[in-house]
Amino acid sequence: MNVGDKYVQETKKEVVKTPDTFSIRYWEVINMDKVIKELNQHLANTDFKSTIVSIQHLPDLQWDLENLLEQKILSRDFYDEIASHYNLFFNFEPPTDFPKAKSIIITAALQPKVSVKFKLSDKAYGVIIPPTYLQDTDKDASNIISLYLGKYGYKIYPAKLPVKLLAVHSGLARYGRNNIAYIDGWGSFFRLKAFFSDIPCIEDNWQEVRMMEFCNKCVACINKCPTGAIHQDRFLISAEKCLTFFNEKSDNFPRWVNPAWHNCFIGCMICQDVCPANKDYTEYIVPGGEFSEKETLMILKGVLKDKLPLDTIEKLKKLYLLDEYNILQRNLEVLIRKSRVRSML
Ligand code: SF4
Ligand code: SF4
Image 1: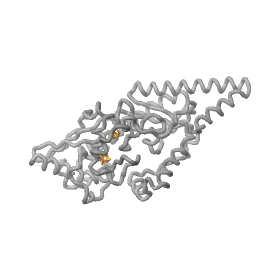
Image 2: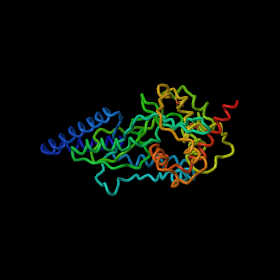
Image 3: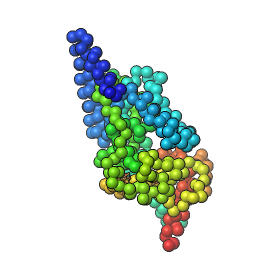
Image 4: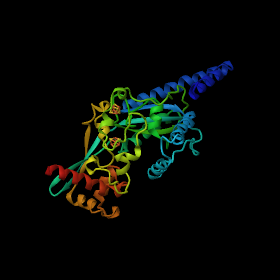
């Protein structure tokens, strides 16, 4: 019996104590179930997918991560490096300033690729930002949930948790062989967000981590990944070989990384673009603005962030790239060079 089932059983045990308790608990269970169902529907009406799990699964989530490290499936040095780079110091305890937390609400918002243009020598270079980098929907989800649950006296609090792993355990998503999370009907074109809430989770959605059925008969991402990071005989990719790992941090690219492999302004879309689960979304691209020749040159010359014109800062902010400014010069240069080489051949 998992912790969630135990919780429901214990709730049921409480229900039969006395007729009074029965009516109160029964009303609570029915009412909360209704509130959660309506919340999910409310989020669905505003284009979010969502689910909820009990906070009692926080140790399970932590155990999953620890297990990967203990079994050396994930190198501790590598994990420490990415944890410090992305500030991924997860908190697997209920927040101290929100001690009433009882559940975790996970939301997903559909998100396209974003195409951004950079002008240089009277030519426009289009670069792609993959789904998940834009964060506008985090606030939208927070506002919608707060407003809705607020009517019933419940609150939410942002959760700093491994959201992909959480979404897969909650049944909202499945892992692909490339370790990207996928949602039925949306492929990998979405952004996840998690919130603690004080609404109790009656129906527990927690489940074992599962891989997409598509992956059973597919090796497309293994064949296409330029760095050989995806494996057939093990589930976890070699994240330390993934282009995303290299182009999201400011160190020089390793010599063995062929410049022709770069394909996004940040991140990499190769294994997602070949994935059959994404076939309806690969062309789901929206324009994300244009940088003038002057702005492009400033980025390529590495002009300091605080010396950029306000307009340029605003454009980068809108793309959630201002904090990543220190990697943009290198990433843009490699893509422009690649495009120029290609046009010469
Ligand atoms: S490309 Fe194929 S194997 Fe890779 S994640 Fe997609 S379905 Fe799975
Ligand atoms: S994101 Fe790119 S480098 Fe990383 S696993 Fe996928 S194809 Fe390979």
